[in-house]
Every structure is written in structure tokens, then in C-alpha cells.
Length: 316
Image 1 (cartoon, rainbow, N blue to C red):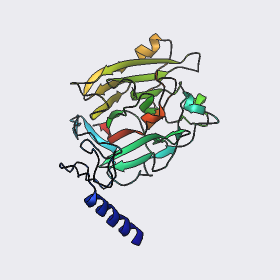
Image 2: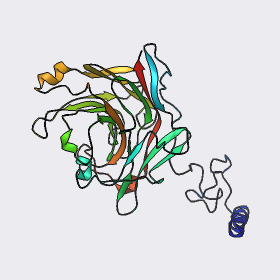
Image 3: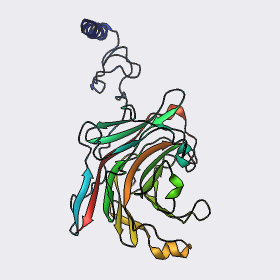
Image 4: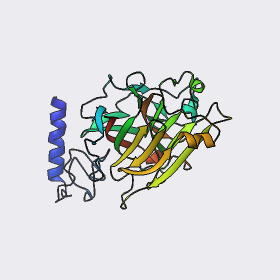
């Protein structure tokens, strides 16, 4: 304690005696030594300094809290101080030995560290970072804790910025496991509510994966959707949704429908429709992999996936 007090006094004296002046706007009064400041909150060319770390968006779409044909069934507003273990599990490691690289040649190790998953201002933050030797991030799921069939899902989120990042907000069949992935993928189905690549800040995808075995009959139907009103997906909140009914899934962004899948579509590809079973939720921020075209650069990290809430509604 005495050492901390002495340090504060030293920094205060250093600031007041420095020939440099504090930023007149007070924009760097954040208790940190930023940029080329000579001390905490003082000196240097500090006019454009910002606190390091995640920046919560100040703009974007917000979904209604109720729908006339639906009732709220399950949700997480991420308003606490830690991940609710009654709702969520962590996926850990590299996916090995059964799913090395998480099936996609991804570069990161998933952890349950506070360095990779934490909360800020009522948001869940998943941080992808690089420690000088490897990438780390987080992936969470509701397997065996919340599995459901049909309804409306709304996820309010803001995307990362770095090229080489790969965000996936998706769902897998209730019987799918990491230890034996081929038993229920793609035959059990995968519902990608939203996927985003950091190389293009104005594009997302909604996709359904299916097929009786892998790799021979793996099929998917995917559609891209562009950002709205000049607000990129990494600068503002968007709400990513599906309306999931028997024999039909509809994808929406900010309540605008842009994609759907039905048994007629999977049948046209010679495959059965697997999406009338129960599924669970997965949120992941990955680095690298088969889908991104851009190679991640370590100096672009840390980067952040910001999730304000997830809400699941059941039809009345």
C-alpha cells in the first residue's frame, strides 16, 4: 500500500513539474499512461489518446423486447460480472484429438481465462489476442443446458475489426459432440445464425449445413447480407436473428429477412432436411481457418466480439 501511494505521489509531482502540459480537454484523464504521455494523465501529445481496450458501440439497432406471436422463453442479457455456468459451457483447447483446429484449420486455442472472456457495460466480451507465440480466444455453448426446437432467436452484437478474425454465432444438433463430430455432422445439421470475417466489415452470411455423411454429401445453402445505412458491422450493434419453424428457417438482420431454407431446398440437393430436431447455441471468435481469405497479423490483436444479449422466444 505504501508503495502504491508513493507511486501516485511521484506521478503527480512528475506531471505538475513537467515542462509538458496536460491535455486541456481532459480526454486523457483515464488513470493510465497512454501514447507518449510522460506520466499518468499528463504530458505528451495526448489530444487523440484513448483508453486501450474494447470500445463499446454508441450506435446501432436494438430489437423489441416482445413480439405479438411469441413469448420470451430463455435469454442472457450479460448484465452480471461473469459467465452464468447454469446456462453456458466453455469449449477449451484446440479441438484435438477429435477435431484439431476445430475442424477448420483455426489457429487459436480456446480458453476460459478472463483474458479472453469478460464483461463490460452489460456486454459479453470475447477477446482474441496473441501472446507472442500463439493466438487465444473463447468459445461458449449451451450444450445439455439449453437445447430447444423452434422459435425466434435475437442476438445483438458488434463485430471485431482485424482481418483474419472469424465470428460465428451458430447452432448444432443436440446430439453433436466434439469427441465424435462425424456422428452428427453434417447429418444433424448446423444453423449459422451469422458468420462474419474481419476482412470485410460490411458483409455477413447466414447458412444452413446438412448432408447424410462427410465429406461426400456435405451440402450447404448460404447467403450474404450487406451492412445498413453505412454502419459497418464492426462499428455498430446489429441484431442477428432466425425465425425457426417446422420445415422452415428464415434469417434476418435488424428484422429484415434475407434468406430461408426448407425441405424443398435440401431435397433439391438430394439430402434430407435435419432442422426439425432440437439444437443448442454456440458463440465463437476464431482466428484464421478455412473460411477467411486474409491471413491474421499478430500486431492487429487484441480484437473483440461484443455481445449485448441473446433472447429466445417461443411461439404462443
